[in-house]
Image (tube, rainbow, N blue to C red):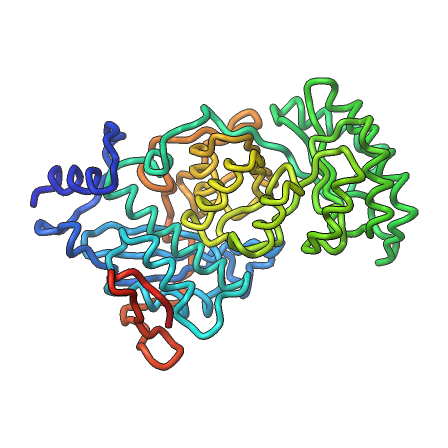
Length: 419
């Protein structure tokens, strides 16, 4: 099978009838076909030289590369070395295009379903598989998710704590830089002590300064950072209502208590958001969305299990008219988020903490004037400089099956069931 027929067959198999983007150079085997493409190697890189979640606000910069026998490599970002090893073992020797099947294998092939940390690793590997799909089809990933539903993704600039003196100036700067909104997370604790009741009035006063700074065409966001109990959260939201915040995020200390969230929802009028601390579809976000307890979901990648997990959550948000405002994440994962948001038809904004590309990326998201534009490079659209990252592990052998460790139990139709 020649290269052109290989690519055309792949596009047809994925239901893609759109014209190809600019060619992406790779060297597939002469006999490569959809039926026999296989994952041959998985490499793990650490661009920071640190362990764990890279020390960057728990948003991992660990990079994973999934190599295939067609000469195509997909990249993802997230997880830790040990968690990536555990999940990656089920991919070796498998067809990388079966993303849903492989997601189920990674998710269900051990005794315990993944916690939120392991889901980061699954999400990174899932993004790498989708990157392979896009590169093989020579299509940007958003085309494979339904095409662009928007011309660009609006962004909001994120800050930490602010003072009254600084708030108005920071808001004006965010607006001058082209952002849709500015977000902050309240006031400083004094020597590690945070008096939530006393913080209500001061937080509201800072929000008043932010409203002046953003003006009538801009917005501000308060991230309450799960620091308030119900009574104080209600009082704070009532003070903010006349200032018209875009939303108040994580207003309650017990953010996963949907009954308590329902009480808050019935008592306040400001838009509410939550979800940055949750994992996949069933981990917290489902009841908040289905019970109309939030207006915006903060789900991000790889936290929710990659592109595969993100698409399911996006469909649920679309069905319930909930906007998507993902938490900031590491730069390769940000590229995945933007493809997901580009294809999402509902309200969408993306949080930006740092916009410059790191030294290990030649190409990444296209950020300009407070907005991120989908680009037409194949797959995720990132170009990694492997000389700027450290290889910390390499896998070439599948994880061995065994009792409660990757056994392959399937339904009669071949779909994956459980361990």
